[in-house]
Amino acid sequence: MGFADDHLVPLVDSGLGNSAYLVDLGDGRALAVDASRDLRALREAAARRGLAVAYAADTHLHADFLSGAVQLAHDDGASILASAAGHRTFEHTPLADGDETDLGGLTLRALATPGHTDEHLSFVLLDGSRELGVFTGGSLIVGSAARTDLLGADRAEELARAQYRSLGRLAGLPDPTPVWPTHGAGSFCSAPPGAERTTTIAAQKRANALLTAPDEDTFVRRLLGSLGSYPAYFGRLSEANRRGPAVLGSAPALPALAPAGLRGLLGRGAHVVDVRPVADFAAGHIPGAVSIPLRDQFATWLGWLLPDDAPLAVVAGPGQDLAEITWQALKIGYERLAGHLDGGMAAWTADGGAQEQIELITADEIAGRPVLDIRQRAEHTAAHIPGAVHIELGDLTTRSGDAPAGAVVACGHGERAMTAASLLRRDGHRGLTVLDGGPADWAEATGRPLKENA
Image (cartoon, rainbow, N blue to C red; front, side, top):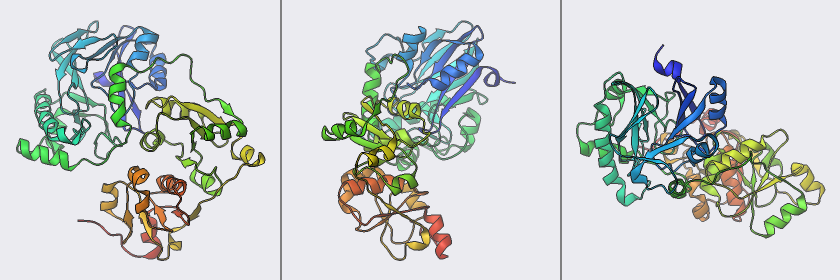
């Protein structure tokens, strides 16, 4: 059994593709690294071990979630450890390259690793002079390094070159050193697919195409060439984390709204987010509602497609977890949660509320209709229905006019396609249908091959 087996608890947010870490310091206290504002899993893990969080370390100013460090300082008295170069406006211990923090037996050493962000730090956890592991945040990750364009496309190459030097520093750690990244598969901060969330320096030296690059220019070309789009809300959260998220009081609740109350909110510019499963939304929904089914990726699409400065009203189905909706919204800075429709769509229609439908069809029903593929560029490039028009879901709010009339909207399974269809319907498109399935189902139904882009 190694240190990680006994003392390290990874806390994976599969929706955002991130890992936070709880480190048992062996004396009833704990270190939290890159904890998000949704502290439920961390608190459960700490309670199981009888731990109090004494330190909260952030590797960088996160763009994809609000940090939980300020909340941990408020609730638990945790000392916040973060880069001095981040110029955070709340109380914290500002760290520079080489600074060490005595955790009471173990030591945390800051290692400047800019690239993903300017002020990025990695944290080497030491027992005396022995490296127990390194928290690499958005620097070295499994199979890659995190994206360098979050501060603007004009700085992407400069930061990629900084990332090259930072990975070189990390590669200088002893080969057996465990690597504990924040970003992993599913993260829009640029992580390749794969099940592994942690790794070692030696494994990355062998298998990471960036670490095996023969020179800096090749590294930069490979890293920048791997970058796809990312959610719109990423542009807001770094500054929110620099200022510090608002401290939350008791567990937030989602108030119940009567149909009349919801109508009043709509008249004042509120957005309706329908979190029910695709089939339920297809059968009947409030006109103008945006379908974002409640699943692990709910926060990503909420933050990509809807504004954070307007009231949000939720339509949920029986048994759906209202607390999960609330926490997913709060962890990405969506504070204006007006409430949920009490009684759901049954109450809405009973009160005379109008509803609309969007037809779901199977792959064998496409029959020559135009297809709109709204998946990410890499997904579309890998394999798509021949002739499909491609517009990423994240671009539809500005490109709805480019969607073909009467399209069959398709993604991998149907959830994102229904989101896209709801946005298009809101913008005036009619005659849309949604593919219940994805390109693989079309290939099986027709016996025809999918197209790959070179």
